[in-house]
Image (cartoon, rainbow, N blue to C red; front, side, top):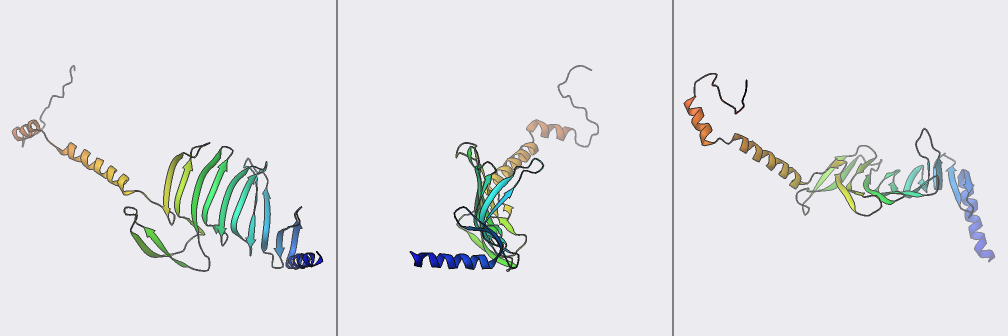
Length: 221
């Protein structure tokens, strides 16, 4: 038993030596460690109180050199679970899920930007042909991009209200929707441009005349 306690004791002493400040959880875990350089490290719990009507919350997760890393869980100040976000390099990355009292509200997809690499190579799927993919080199801007499917659910159920598809922050519109709109517009224009035989005969008789009066079917003065 003594040999089991000794490694744990040495590990704890090593953690304490690395931390300029920290606190201990009830189970003995070291929390909220700030190292000698002032950087947040390891397990953290953060509490934000209600301010100016904005609801407060608590969140827990891992810091690596002052940047959030991996899954972070968020709770209301009453202890209700409301979000699971994933981070990389301190930015949102991958799937984030958001909840209400009724259940899952919506799901987001993100792509984090590596601050050490100014350019990135990505595969951009063709909106019109899912089997076609184009590889592009882009300059990184910002910290994270909306990238993938965003899904919104009806409160209290898993029935989908709507979905949105993003590629590097750009909302994608399916071709069928655009084609339908364009086709409807084209049909309307063609119908408006069509002339009946009566219209053609009228134009022939009155070609070159000015101020031709036409009855429009109205009665009265």
